Image 1 (tube, rainbow, N blue to C red):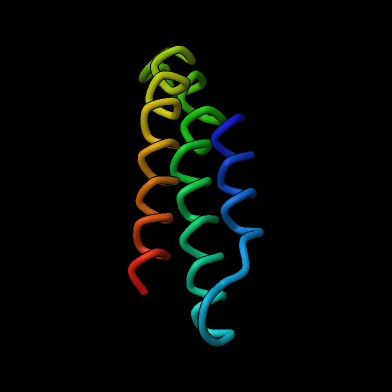
Image 2: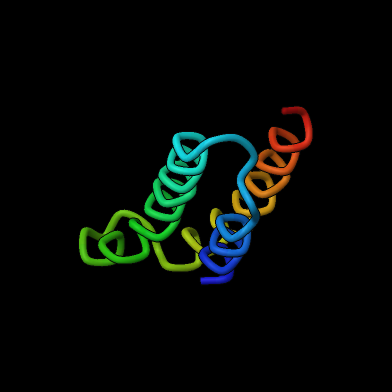
Length: 76
């Protein structure tokens, strides 16, 4: 859930450029949130992995995605 909060915080930053750039950034952050949170919703029911596996993956992936967004924004 913390990764969703980070994604929302990044989404609230003012987007450089036009409305299309802002839309692309919002769509990318929303897709990232679905990738991170999706398995938490159905992974246990399917029996593939435990919740701790998905939380660990989210904790590792979220900071990397935030740093990448900052890097891309800084070099535009």
